[in-house]
Image 1: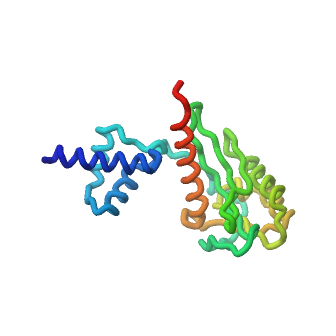
Image 2 (image 1 turned 90 degrees about the vertical axis):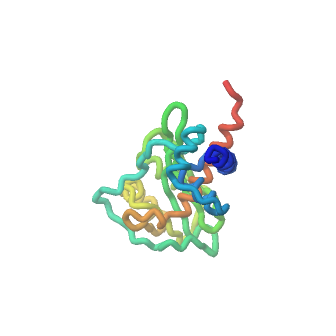
Image 3 (image 1 turned 135 degrees about the vertical axis):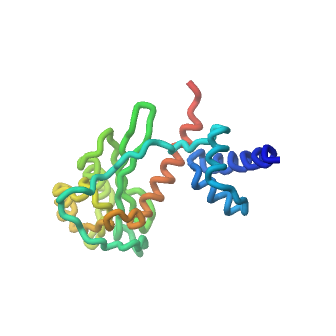
Length: 211
């Protein structure tokens, strides 16, 4: 009886896993099953995933992307989780994420405009440095030529608190805003963008011809 139930459950888990472009892990698969009124314990899901080779493509060792334990100046939180904007170049948000590759990790620094919800600046590198965020900011300013009143929001990472980064913000009259310490929801929109980006990258990998 249990084997039959497990077989049906595994089929549903495979469908959910496929629909997520193989990015969902135990917690998200459990949440989707619950939404479909299927009650199943976390341990059972973990066992069935392990036994049937269902793993998240994003299941990697955690990589820290910002260093917030520093003595650089911290800006106030001007956004306060209000991710709306009534015009372009009113609120930008920035963050850094890692992208796993066959040869190691790459680091992606992105800047998103909250009005258009589009990427206005980005840079890619093999190391997390202040130059990574500086390049993304300089690209965004060069493309958009924002006027006065723009707010740039990020976490408290040293790459964003660096004096060189603050000098560019000051040069273009951009006000700096930073998340509260340890509060990932203060920059949730960038987290959402990175999640979508990684799903797209997983789809592209699926389309690559086998070697």
